[in-house]
Length: 497
Image (tube, rainbow, N blue to C red; front, side, top):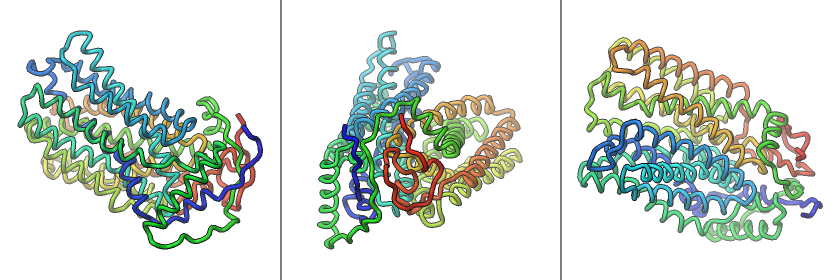
């Protein structure tokens, strides 16, 4: 590996590009990861009760409940494993591999033929594999999007893409409702698990035409490949826009050396030695939003049934309304993270959603809500919370150096999932038989405090990354000559493995 530094304008060339059909195609092809996750979790939740029936697999409630745990565990392992490979082997290689892993796992789930010990092992293994694929998608896709999207669009695009999880939830709810009510049960649940793979196969074909991140290529010493990639993108954008691109200021060049491989032990030293406050920020944002979401979303139908007497066959309609509220938030206020700024909007979305949750808790305890008004309240709360949660993923993907970006995303995603898994257990116990609303009232107040605390941490520790190149937010560890930029935490000394 050559030790000489390479002077490059590639980051500046990417950031000066106008929005084009190329960017739209890329976002659609990569952003489907969140749609698939929302679809997968919703389908699995909707089908859970069906799998206990003798005409399907006849599983016990405990066996069915373990499916969600195994899937989430797979996501954690996949995020860590494929996050490391994404930094090592490239974004494009991994976003092809992770989607294929998901296709295999989820597709094979539909072919579970019995409930014997062997078939149970097969079922749990396929759910684990599907989870690994989706967990790996988070790390590889967030990295690729951030590195290929011009700086002035990065915030709104990343937030909107993360928000499409709820489009998957809507699709999953509708497909499950149709398949379980209008198709024979023994076939319907299998088709439910095949909806995602069919969509994924189409996207896999589209992804084949996407380029590697030239930022990743240049940082790994692949100078010629990086130049070929960026020239191809520029030519495509010029052709589609019908005008020549402006010249790039030579002062925006940076000089880098090929990156050394950094493992998770070295990553921990990067995070907590070079970027300690950013590590605290990322962990706080991811943990607080994950806890709230898992606590509310996975127990929502229990609340409707236990406290408001809503029949189980009607709950999908309420879930669709809840999902739409979550989907609208990132798409309508996501651009404010680029204009008003990351710090202010993170604080506002977390604090406002927490405050509204506290108000709703009081109204719930006072007994003035019904199923419809409770759903409306959740829609308003998560209109803000969804934008904030999507921005949490944006934050951890842009505030650390390129060489460790995917691994950092994987680590914070894994941490969030571990804490988030506690939410449904705790709130399920608080709901109980529905005869003690005071317990859930206290639980909602605790959730409100947690979200407000996340907002306060963002207020003081968030990075003002709006409209800034990724290299201005966090210079690559391999950079040897730095262009003039605002000195950020940890920007002074490149990390040595």
